[in-house]
Length: 417
Image (cartoon, rainbow, N blue to C red; front, side, top):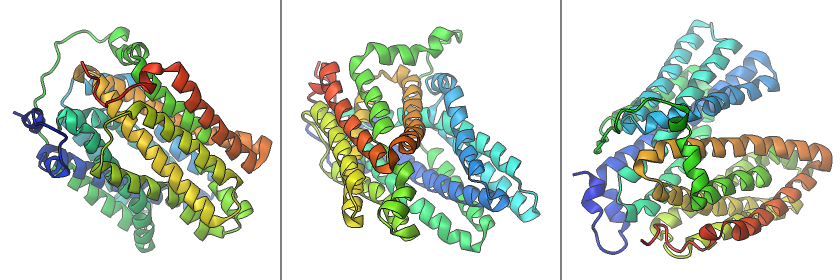
């Protein structure tokens, strides 16, 4: 019997101490923490080394693009694999691939033959690994904990990820003082630690019946999302809200030309949303949401839009930091509710394919959101761009309230049958 099954019949809302007793989940949590920290450090070192080699901002953009394209192109295949293969082994293989990239960069840097092309091709490898890792990772949590514990598990996972996102780049920057090789060695060690933990994660995996791979089986996740309006509303809400409300791409302009605070202020602005998200994820771990989750989801998106609007018109650093922190906290509420709803609404046999589509929506919203912010800033200026995005996000929340009544009226995380 798995840990999840053992706790599935527990009466009442599970306590946080019960979550800590789910050993498979905790090992998986440590895998995500170490692997995400390693990945964040790796990106800092690769970006810095690329800029030292070429001095071109365009090449920094290519690093991100080369990682995003595999996720876009391999979505359907990665989701299909996640529904047929043991998901913990997929995550292990993907973390191993990232560790090998770090090891190659150690050798290349020490040997003096690291180059722009090497960094770009290794970025493709990293993007391919992430393409398979994300759907397997998202679909793994629900089989490691009981359904009643999933909201708390999602919040606890988000807390760990936010800590890694905040601490990883800072740690990578500090270690980079000793050189890129030192960063890559630390990354390889973190990936190795993640592999050790994920190989100890066991759950009951029943391979589905063999069937020929066809366009129908690959597209099953897309079809499932389209037919389940609660899932469609939750997934599309993230796409449009982040697409319109993202102001992160314009933070350098705000730091220099609007708030006049320089690089140190830019660091604070970048950290503020993650700090708000981390605090909210800790609160949601302690007090998970249970009632009126649909309304709270849409309200959180509206608050995200309003906070973005306040940031857009602010000329005070402290008000701007507060607005960004509130936007991060509101976004975390949205993330936890959306991911929990999507996982609980999706049968386990479909979770990999649905999670793969969801991952692309998340990635596309972030990438296209940065493009949208830059394009509208060129036309309206940075303030006009952020204000328009904030207003648009509030309107999206209102439209989704009317357009997806099943989502807006959802009371509990798990549908009552």
